[in-house]
Image (cartoon, rainbow, N blue to C red):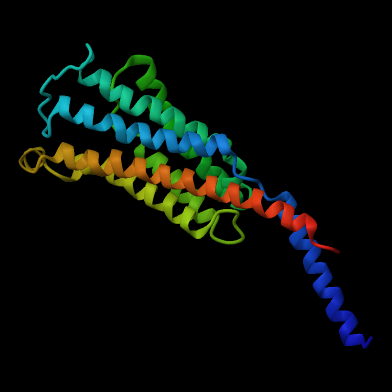
Length: 232
């Protein structure tokens, strides 16, 4: 064997060792965390039509009731359980979201959890809908997670874009009522437009993210026997 061939084989062998090490240390998506994200998004989408029907499309609360619960009750039921499920999904995906993202992703995770958990606890404890005051904090956290995972990430480019998109939706939800005048909001049924984006589209984003993680987990399980059967 020529010296150049021996060097080439050595390099290829070292790359194989690195790939095998990465494959063994890469955090697997957690099925229960992915399911929690999907359920959180689905809950938000499912309860939003009830809430918006009872509240009405404008800033005037029409005071509707369903099964003895008024607008505040259904608002808290829309955002409380969905927030708890999404927080559970993020907590179960901590390593996947932060391991390869460095300090930026870890700081983003903390900010996102603060911006998510505090309104969720208030919603569940007091059964009152909380204004999106912490939405910018949640948004900054998701954007930092996406930015921290740009290079050498365990996340796919689609998953990073989903996190970035969710952050943009949260920024929109925090600025919508500050930028658009109340009289304009009422003329265009602004509360309903707001809900379609801040609740329905936001819920779709979590369903897509959780579904992507489940699909990747299935792919890993299918590939595992094949990898183990490869001769050295």
